[in-house]
Length: 175
Image (tube, rainbow, N blue to C red):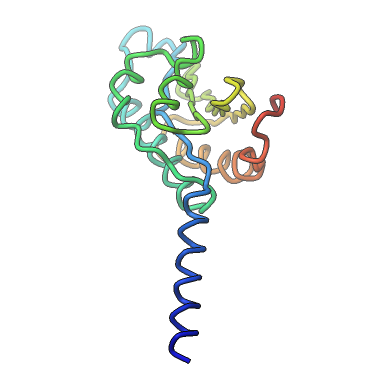
C-alpha cells in the first residue's frame, strides 16, 4: 500500500513539474509614456507618472504569473537596454530582448497622455517565433491618478489579454 501511495505522489509531482515547464514564457517590459499634453511640454514627465509606468509593468507581470497560464521572464538582464530603447519604434527590438530571455512572447505597453483628463493605455503582444504583433488592445481612461491607471490595466488584462487565449495563436495573424 505504501508503495502505491509513494508512486501516486511521485507521479503527481512529476506531472505538475512537467506541466509547469510547458507554460509559455512571456517577457513583459515596462510601459512607455507618449506625452502629448501641454503639461508634459512645459514641465516634462511628472514623478508620479514615471512611478505609475513602473507599477503598470509590475501589475501586468503579477497578473500573468497569477493566472497560472504563463511563466513570466525576469527582464533584469535586458532591463537597462530595453528602457534605453523606444520599444514602440525600434523595429521589433523587444523581440530581440525577449529572445535573449528565452521568451515565446514579448509584451509592451504605452500610456498616451493627451491631457490630465484624456489618457489611453495600450498593450501589444508579439510572437517571438515569427516576429509579428499578434494582438493589440487599448482602453481610454479619464483622470490621471494611480487608481485610474491601475483600474484601466486591470480591465484590459481581464477583458482582453487573458480572455483572448493569445498563447494559443502562436503563428496566426494579428487579432
